[in-house]
Each structure stands twice: as structure tokens, then as C-alpha cells.
Length: 276
Image (tube, rainbow, N blue to C red):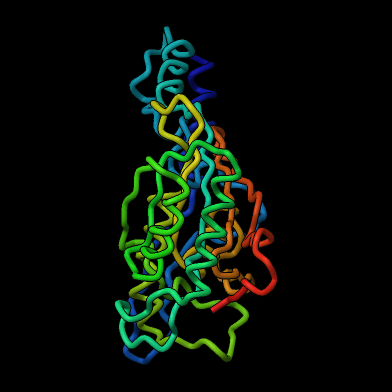
């Protein structure tokens, strides 16, 4: 019983250590509206960042005091991840900026070349990819169609969550990009939902490591990187990503996350690089 009491105390602390998320509405006085996310000011890693830390998923009050340790371990093993997720975040290729609607913003000839090079690079890495998820926007879909030629048989799906947008007001601010305050309010929760939906440790039933591809947009990728590494999310605009570049995150069973590549485009000749 003393063992269980110690576990209960430790478990309670672990379960309550995670920060609370909330979206703040736009005020009538035009004040800034941003998505509130956990602060990274302490520099300490939140082990339950994806709400999948095994201890936080166990109802300790229902564990029998006489068989506490054995029963607790059974519950913990039930929720424990066993595999590692390798996630490749691909920025779409160059597209026609002059397009008035999403349908008109198709890839340029250079953009199509970039997608070919990215597809070749992903194939040459030699991984067995399990899926490709892409933003439903035209430029991301067209990038996927070219890349997927080099990865035959890989399951493909589309997601509106991954569409481009304004995730959160950047700090420091920039003069060349100032969306309306309402855009942060509308896009922020969606992009945060994309992070929660696609970036987390493996399901407990997953036995083998997976290699997954997500094709989307610079703002989305930069925000995801900050959130995954538990850096201040307002820092997302301090990074720059080339078209067709590869960003590589690893999420281990422990919940630890590492960044192996950020905006890698070294596989492209200099004359094929762009950041539109």
C-alpha cells in the first residue's frame, strides 16, 4: 500500500504537469487574437506533451492495493508505445503566385522539376514509407502527385487541416507579412489541430517503426517544428524553408522528439532552389 501511495503521488504530478490549450476570441477593440499554447519558458521537457504518457492514462484509484505493482505495470504496458515514428515534412514546390484562387495557383515548370528531385531524394533514402498525407491545396496536391511516382504503392490521403495559414503572431514581428488579426484566430486552431493529429508518439498496437510523409506548407511545417521541439511557437517565422525541402522529425516511444533535418534541399542544384 505504501508503494501505491508513492505511485499515486508521482502519477498525479505527471498527469497534471501538462499545460492547458485555449483559443482566445478576437476582441471588439481589435486586440491581438492568437492561439494560446504551452509556454516553453522553463526549458523543461513536458513528457506528456501529446497526452500519451502511459502514467497519465492509468486510473490509479481503481488499482488493487494488494496487487498494486503488478496491476500497475499491466496497465502501463497496455498504453506504452513500442515503435518509433519517422515523419518527413515536405514543403510544396514553387507555384504561380499570380493565381487569384487556389485552383489557379498551380506549380510552375521549375516547381515540377523541384518535385521530381524531392521524389527522387525520398526514394533514394531507401525507407519503406507507410503513407503520404498532403494538404488539400492545389500546390501541395500537385507536389504529391509528382513525388508519389517515385514511391509506388504508398497510401495517399488529403487533409484540410494541413492547408496554409497564419498559425500564431510571430515574435519578433516582420514588416513584410501582416495578415489580419482574424486570420490568426481562424487558422491557428486548425494548424494546432494538424499538429496534434499528426505529431505524436506511436499507437501502443504499432509494433514496427514507420516512415511517413506529410506534404504541406512552410508556415505549417515551421509551426509544427516549434511545437514538436517544445520551443516558443512564436518563433516559427525565424526559419526559412526552400520549396520542395525536407524536414525530418523523429518521435520515439518515450515521447522524446528530435529534429534530424530542417528544410534540407541540398539534393537540388543551385539553379533549382526557390522560396516562393
